[in-house]
Image 1 (cartoon, rainbow, N blue to C red):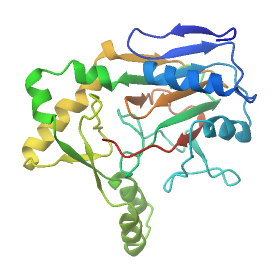
Image 2 (image 1 turned 135 degrees about the vertical axis):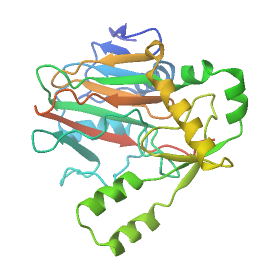
Image 3 (image 1 turned 90 degrees about the vertical axis):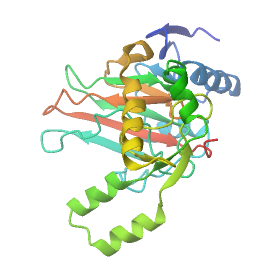
Length: 270
């Protein structure tokens, strides 16, 4: 594919593509190739991509309709761009393994994260291949979750609204706009539960549900299914939100880390 070079970050997940310029209009052939590679490798990395907001959005839009996140701080001129800015006054809070917006009926296909400013050291992002996580489960656990559905909600965002003194009527209105949803725990033979948004597993009593969710969530911590990406300014990560989880290390605080994210809409998991 042109003069692109591939560098795998680990056998399990993650590939850096060298020699590609995301600011230009890429051919349909290249977009199709990237789509296939994303499914295979789960997360793609690119260096030295000094993209404008318009270029960031245009690249993401080649893969589908874009989301506007209802709870995050978004760029005022480009609401598709989520501004994930952390500094001394705004410590990071997402250092848990998760997939994005699994509380939507149609969760994200993937996200494209662009580094605007990064600390000299720290602030890496880890990614885990949840298809491999499923494969490594014991057969008894696989049978237990084969037809299970899990509840996903946005309670963490509602709690943030409450902590910011938003009135309860507004919180109730927001909650009604995004009710909890059920998704298969494992459909494409990939685990689809996470620490932040998965509340319970359908059909189990609370103790059983909590115990199983802990067991399934811990699978992402297996270093055999991970890669770790060290950011530099203008680096880009594009991950498959359906089959990968990510963990943003918060070890850099109180230093500054500024990232822009554009997210592509997905389908109902099945």
